[in-house]
Amino acid sequence: MRADEMVNRYFLEAAETIDLPEEYYEVLQSSYRETDVQVPVHRDDGSLSVYRGYRVQHNGARGPYKGGVRYHPAVDISEVRALASLMTWKTALLNVPFGGAKGGVNVDPSELSTRELEALTRRFTASITHVLGPFRDVPAPDMNTNPQVMAWMMDAYSSKNGYTPAIVTGKPLAFGGAPGRRQATGRGVAYTLERALERVGRTPEGMTVAIQGFGNVGSWAALTLRDMGAKIVAISDIRGGIQRMDGINVDRAIEKVEAGGSVVDCADVDLLDSGEVLEVNCDVLIPAALGEVITKENVDDIKVDWIVEGANNPTTPDADQTLFERGVNIIPDILANGGGVTGSYFEWTQNIQQFTWPEEQFNERLREKMRQGVDETFGAADRWGVSPRQAAFAVAIERVAEASKLRGYL
Ligand code: GLU
Image (cartoon, rainbow, N blue to C red; front, side, top):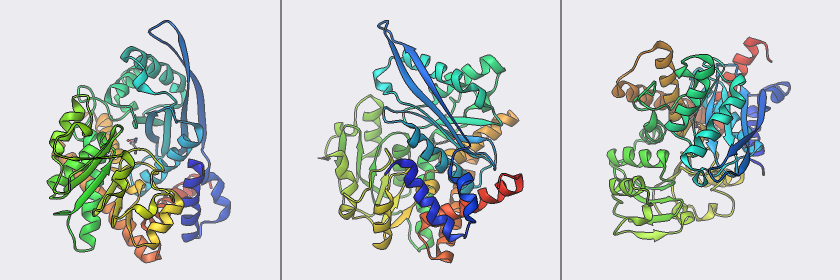
């Protein structure tokens, strides 16, 4: 099933829950605008490579389009479309005043030099600049993009339009970045689990956790949960996985990765294949890498009671149904990883006001927003007797439909 078809299946189930009039479906399911551009890059060896770049703006009823830009060879229009619509539902669920968008270029950035990466980013930004703006569409980092890429995007936009830090979020702290934004997605993952556990009279203290993906999201989720008393027993990155049932030294693993290595370079751990990390016998699983990793092929081998979706779209609809029937608690992606865009909202407001919040204030507000999102989602799930994912989509669709109606799109 294509990624956009998967998201649309979640949409349809939720739309039925709230009795959304069928005539609204098309406006809310399809993209408002899809920009598809060629991105030629002169390589260091004198050759020319041509990539494809996308910016999909799904729905802007509740505010400027918002969403990350990813660099990955598997990027295509259906993936970007799916991820753009997930952003619409995510911003609505977390109640931040944005719509939903996503961008991507089908490039493997590990094959490019820094100069080539900068050229690619500037060319892509120039090609989509007419659909961007601090009150129109505000990109951010996503898979394989980072504060440096945002700095280049901001510079490319500002060189035409004047100094505009609010054109992107996830910027470096040296100009317009917000202390706390880099950590926000991973911390948000931990805050949602903390609150969901609290609702059933439990805490993260002593819980065992496996994390697939040890980039920005996975590593900050690990650190935050470790500080809450959880034990991180398995982690993986692109080179493989590691396991240690009495707790992995998370700081040591981060040191290895920051030095350009991998978690598999850690001492005193058992080695796993990347896929095996999903099947470890522990309490909590956090997929924090690619989409579509929990499928009907491996769902029967998943042993945890809790899944917190740090990645976007990690669970296919068939696997999701099986897990729900088995009583596994899933904190769905549009809630669990919403700390990133919530942090982006805090950064954007600070840019608009030319003012900086201290990191403690940022974190407190982030935690508050995430806890509220959990209460609204799980409260609605109980009220309607549906899964938290269906409830999350339903709450979000109600909000977007209301704004769209008031603005006259529906
Ligand atoms: N890329 C992140 C996401 O998927 C953050 C998007 C943003 O901050 O705009 O939620």
